[in-house]
Length: 451
Image 1: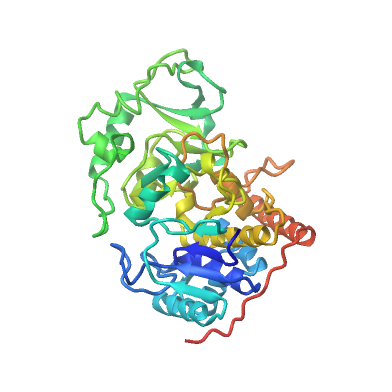
Image 2: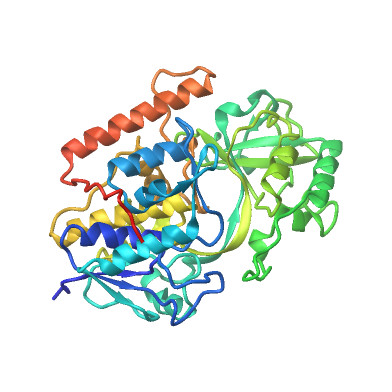
């Protein structure tokens, strides 16, 4: 027999969003949170939705990826975002909040709801025979991780973000690059290649060794797997290490000249539309401004638009392309949903969004209805499609960016502002049509938040 309540493991942004959405629809929720009984290395309070790093929910600039997602979440009746907007503090073109006030309001709202039962204890096993949303975040406890191995399978949990930069294809100077797969394997346009002369290679190595890096948090141990070393750490092992490692030119003769270059940087396509490419092996701890300065020196990347910059930090996330469907259900155990950073999404807003989607589909499943899939032309739908795309064999955490969206029909111009505006309008229209045809009816949260 299925239990009457939906269980949510984790009281972060995703778990808090899911708990609210389910409870306001008259369905009992059991929200499990191990703090304060057991604290993580990063959290300092027992409040729900505590923001550990930045206090920003991203850009509010018109037609930006973050703004498009915000507009979609508002249309879907998002709770956490509505609190953030109600208590926003001045931050230019970003949505920033008083982080303590945000967590206090969200905690009080959930504590006061009659259908939310709070269990302040560490969960080491998922509740049996219950619809469950797993939203334990990047610092999931060791005991729960160990119990999840049979659920996820071996080698399906990752413990470090090893993220390489992503660039927009239409921002590259393709005349300086060439398409080729190593030894001509696979689709000829799966990889773009940046050819480097000896001088260009040495300049890159010098920049990597002298660039300013981000220092680790107190709770992070600088211990990385050999396969996900920071690019600057590889360069520090010896001047030629990159040329004989991730930048080796072997098997990559330039089809324009038939010759092999001194070194080659490969860019791997990020989606089936080939609107964005990932700099292979360029996971890095360089500061964002340093990455842009250094990587724009590379041939063809002089005016590159970085859809995502590289990073490396401690994180726990699952192999979502293999394990999850776009409804955020485990393919083999559909009564279990996964939300938040555990899915491989990056950012506060993205975590909140996955909590909302997990709640939508947990509610549908609770009512014995079919789970819902958002259209791919929406930013949220495109994000879910990307992180659950089974063709992805090199999965890295992802935040929202314009490169996730399918390309526009009959648009080949270079006007980025116009293109983004058209993509934004298409997203808005797609979500509106979906809401009119879907069974989901958003409930607008009250804006009268008080402590």
